[in-house]
Length: 310
Image (tube, rainbow, N blue to C red; front, side):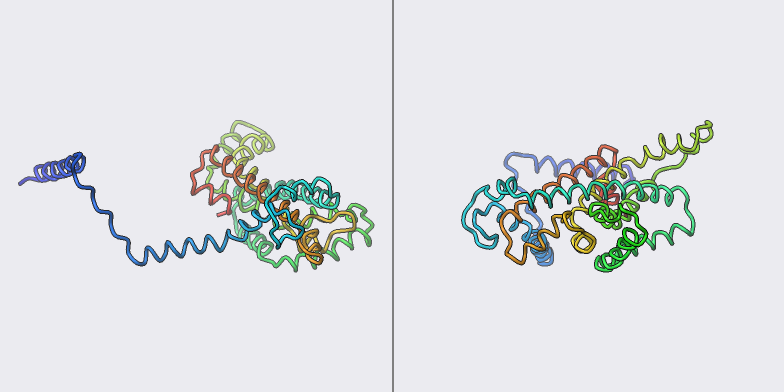
């Protein structure tokens, strides 16, 4: 029997089996039995997901509590959300946090974008040293950053007499932008490392000025990562409790520090209500990041790599 005859026979056998399975009266195929290890891993995965997200679900549910204290359920209602509109202290704390996060995101995006482009387009031994410094910023405990920032801000504001560093918004913005700058640098570098530099070389061959090439080619290629980095920097800057507690000044208390001080008198449902709103803003920002990268043509794997700086 020749090789072609064997292939034809195998094909006819497959077609006949498919035809038998497609008959109305044909018995359905049995599903493959799952092994004990598969079931155990599935159960373990569900338990891990519950461990991670159950506290968030609880705080969202208790944001609709009409009781006086957060831990005591009294009934379902929207009193906690409406009370935000009549409490100036909460409004001021949320306003300071949003303004600080926006300014910090702008600072981190500018610095991180330039650093990421430099690492991607000018490789060398210095890149690994610079990545090491960024990694050091990323893994340094927040309490260390806070202890280091406080005397530095006092030195700049009082000893050197630079008045802007006596402003609470400036202090909070600078402190919040440190970690966010490292994140943006990772994301932009990860985006450009996979992009060919031939377009920039062609632009230079056509006598375009370096700034024109940077603006129209390099920045355009990196723009999805820049937008993603900006949104992530904004969400990261919303939660910077330890640094904010050290560098804040009177009158500019951000939301995390307000929540921390509220522990002394007992958490109220409006704390959970604002936390739910913050969570919603974070989810919207992450969804926008994924949408921007998807519209740029990235796959799900590429989106995950870009968002994690991989």
